[in-house]
Image (cartoon, rainbow, N blue to C red; front, side):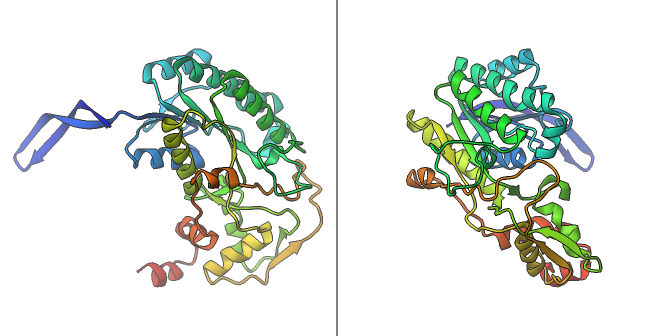
Amino acid sequence: MVGREKELSIHFVPGNCRLVEEEVNIPNRRVLITGATGLLGRAVYKEFQQNNWHAVGCGFRRARPKFEQVNLLDSDAVHHIIHDFQPHVIVHCAAERRPDVVENQPDAAVQLNVDASGNLAKEAAIIGAFLIYISSDYVFDGTNPPYREEDIANPLNLYGKTKLEGEKAVLENNLGAAVLRIPVLYGEVEKLEESAVTIMFDKVQFSNKSANMDHWQQRFPTHVKDVASVCRQLAEKRMLDPTIKGTFHWSGNEQMTKYEMACAIADAFNLPTSHLRPITDSPVLGAQRPRNAQLDCSRLETLGIGQRTPFRIGIKDSLWPFLIDKRWRQTVFH
């Protein structure tokens, strides 16, 4: 499933440098990834690219030089990239995903999470592309888990509401689209603040200062590599079976509070935990969160789709570059 394309490359040997035109294989399965500069988008791009897909990523502020720079709020720009590239699949990762930011900037969040998603779905439908819209477990109120795809959504905060409205906009504008709801993510971050899981690492490492950690909200930390694999498997199944559409759930299966995650991180790196203090009260600051929005993933599992990285393994791989005590790194990795 490949085409051929001309590519220029430089051949250099001492005393001689020449430009050579070579034929390279280009996979003819095409995928467009929005939000490709983000934590999930990078993983999705890599997953498709490494599995014989011609992947094009787009981003906005951090796009160049690796990805296309596209403002998803500019409907003309979206139209042009989709119609020029003609993707078979679009994975829509771009979103404002920080609940507290959404509360403070509601109009911008609605534009990106809802309006841009609906427009993308419309453009995908015109060319017959399969759109996967990434949504969230925060569409549920967390009072009656686990949640199946058809259970009634009742988001507690504006972020959850924008993701739910985004789902509706996508499915109204594109009957063949898919919605993939996922929980809190972690993975190979460029900086610790990229994930609500990895951001805890500094508090874990600085054991000379006590740190309060939430021990109320039940989370299911999920590796971005696993979500990326699910997106690819879903796309490949859809290319063989047009009935693959609608809403799906994917999640890690290890239930943890932030306090328990922090302890697991400390344990993975042989760090102390005595300075970590579990707080069992419901948080009073910031956007309201669901207590336990566990997702039932049996619909995807029945299709034979899925991948789960154990938290201890995934978090160690993600965080060791940020380890302050280099001695540990030398003993374990050298």
